[in-house]
Image 1 (cartoon, rainbow, N blue to C red):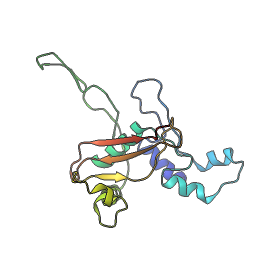
Image 2 (cartoon, rainbow, N blue to C red):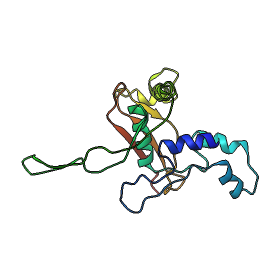
Image 3 (cartoon, rainbow, N blue to C red):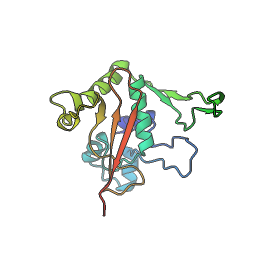
Image 4 (spheres, helix red, strand yellow):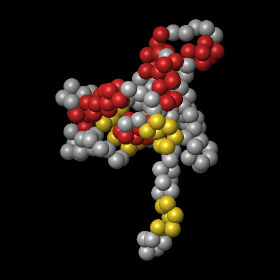
Length: 182
């Protein structure tokens, strides 16, 4: 469980992004010691299983998921999120640019990173993928993590889906949030 937590934190999950818009929730990536404190030493193997699929006591924000997906797509570089790329005059002249800032390079075997990317691709593009029927809508090929994620500030009845843009050199990370109408 703690190895999963270290990897999740490497991808920016369970920590504030530093976007600078308040308030920002850090979310939670639980560790074995967190469970020991919360459940008074009653650790269960199921906690690790739930954590491994992003459920149970895992809480992350949609922005954290988007940042993590972009790191998967770009080969392991975790960028600082930003809202403004450049300030331009009405005629299009650039007054000030805000270049991308790297938070860190994720130390992960490139083969393992590629395996994760290929698995995300297979979920919606491989005939055996569990989201293939829903994904065959004529849209471009994409990578996706199926299943519910419960962001830190959402009630349990909401879910989000994470997708990367087209395969090859994706340039888009999409977070879809849905909730039932009451």
